[in-house]
Image (cartoon, rainbow, N blue to C red; front, side, top):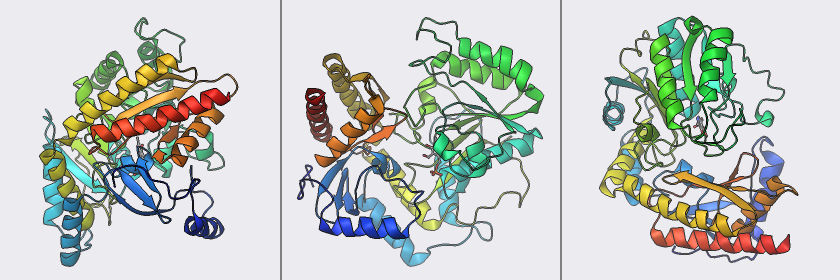
Length: 440
Ligand SMILES: Cc1ncc(COP(=O)(O)O)c(C=O)c1O
């Protein structure tokens, strides 16, 4: 697999169409499908559908598999593990793999605090566990979170999420224990300030309004924040992050960084927090940990992870197959220097997109950290619709990119992506942009 190749000019083909029809009849309509992709196999950065169409994946699937699809070392590790032990619940017996993986994770970046880890079966569960643990430790009820964030699809994680109304409407999420403050979005400042020329009104608001009037610090069990918002790839500015750490220390409110989306290499650092030279009390991880097998992790300061035996169970958390895949994933990432590759290829893609923004009428705000790169579609006649058209035009040409927020296109290829693959993807994207521009 070396380039996108479409057997059918407009995917899906005959076989794909049959699967689509059956799925639409049989499966829950809550699942959303941005494009008609019926996956059959995948390798590296490429996905092949059941009709033999080959796509270069810079989209959603790519970031859930982290280093890339079906890396031979990961496949080998999973096969070997499946022959020995597929599962044993960690709350009834120990496994070597669980301890091995936690040991690797708690010693990955140069932590200052001594850490312990809990393995879960998803990112949502890691977030739930972090909030439960913080409440248990502090004996305080409330969580401070930020608008526009996404922390997962379970009720507790939803209570601190506010990405879109579709995900909340009619679910009656019990949000009384969560207080949401404006996310420090410098692209669209909630206080109307210019990026880089402000007085950090967002931080002042947090101090002067939220912690003084809405949420007494002695009731705050934790602060949870995404260092880079998964939905739009907007980053927390460094001054805000430092200020948040300061408030957390001043009031003894544990700081939880939700790195389920950007964690483990994607930003060109093992953890995104390293970019801010910041150490959080808890870090939640999931995507990218285990090359696609279900796994999440909560890494916490030892002094905070002092809850008692039996108060949080996770029968599938740290499943041996997922642990084996994660250990092999870490070996490959280290051996093939994929964190450095994320930095290099991400920068290359970002430079090309920045140049494209200069000559394009419909693109703005190219931004990114490592291989989490995004650009906004702008158009007075409806940026959201145009962004969707652009995503679908790319898809029909064999490039998968994902849509976030109202009109953000996100490029999140596997960490093994090569310079040639970045150039190929960019070529397809540019051609699609030009076609849409000329049709406006
Ligand atoms: C920032 C963030 N937190 C938590 C989650 C939830 O993870 P999972 O889907 O594995 O439950 C996600 C999922 O996209 C996420 O992006």
